[in-house]
Image (cartoon, rainbow, N blue to C red; front, side, top):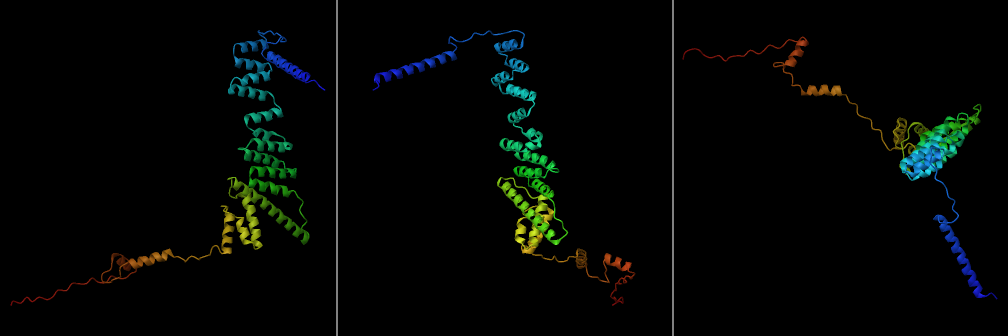
Length: 347
């Protein structure tokens, strides 16, 4: 059976050993240990000597400049961290400027909060990484950067149709519905079309075209609804307006007039407005009321005739007399006043 006193003695010995180790570590940190190696502070005209002099005299800006010239970037950054934000920004800029590689470019974009260079200068096969960086770090510039990345992919899609589909994803992230329609049509344009020699091939071609149109409209409308939830909705213009007008006509031709009207929305595009008015009348929301013909010239003449005084041949007005003279009519003789005979005979 183990002796209880021996157990307690072992516990006490272990505690003393631990306390000794802690005391040794504390003495090393305070510089009071016996194992410290003495060193000489170098001063002089060499690089390290000048850096030491600048540190001893408190001239941190000069010390940082000397460290950068000597290639001691780590030391310069440590000193700049204790010298204010302006000096730290200068050191960071010089370091990133002097180290031109993809890693320093990413660090520079992260420090400066500007990922435009990464999106515009990365290779096309790095578009996924650039898109991830934009989504992660650029909340306010996300639509602009994603659209620029999509434009780069769309520009290279002439030789590679897959890039057009990648551009579609970038435009969805950017919320650019109109550019989405352009990229979608470009991605479908590279597909081989059916030979219209037979009616069956022509029917298959039309069915495929209608299915592609419906799929594109569904994606575009979903993106529009998502933008409305974010408060970024915009009226349909350009290629998006042409797309919705085409789809609305297709629905109207199939007899789905109410459904066709829903895809026109409140856009101010002239073509969509005209189609919307036609659907309103076809559905009975508006009725056509022909306007009464107006003849303003005839009405004005009639009004003038009503305002003229009646014609009196004995006493014509100046205007009536001028008209009669113009038509060659002679004016009626002026009436001669008659005097009542007065008797002159004396009474």
